[in-house]
Length: 102
Image (cartoon, rainbow, N blue to C red; front, side, top):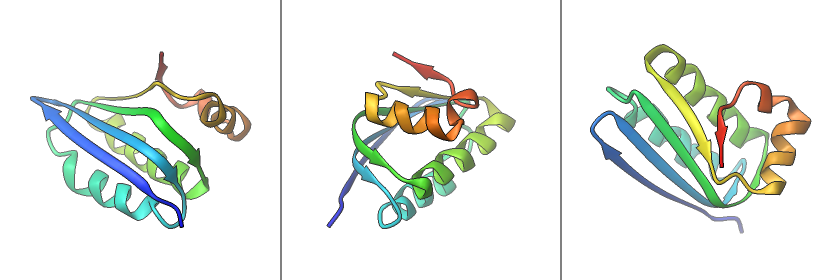
C-alpha cells in the first residue's frame, strides 16, 4: 500500500504543494486533481519534495502537466529534491525542463 501526503497553501499568487511518501500510479490522481483545480491565478507554483520518497512515470506526468499550465501563467519551482528523486529526473531527462532549487 502506497501513501501520498499532500499539503497545499496559497499566499496571494504563490502556491506551495508539499509532497510526502510515494507519488505513483495509485496516488498521482490525488495530485492531478489538486493541480487541475487549484492553479487559477497562481503565478508561482512551488513543489516542496523534502519528504517525497519515490516518484513513478505517472507522477512525472502530473508534474509535466503542472509545468505546462504554469508556463502560460508564471513559473514552477521544485524545492528540497532528494537524491533518489533527483536521479529519476536526471535519468528521464526531466532535469532539463524543471527549475530545481535547494
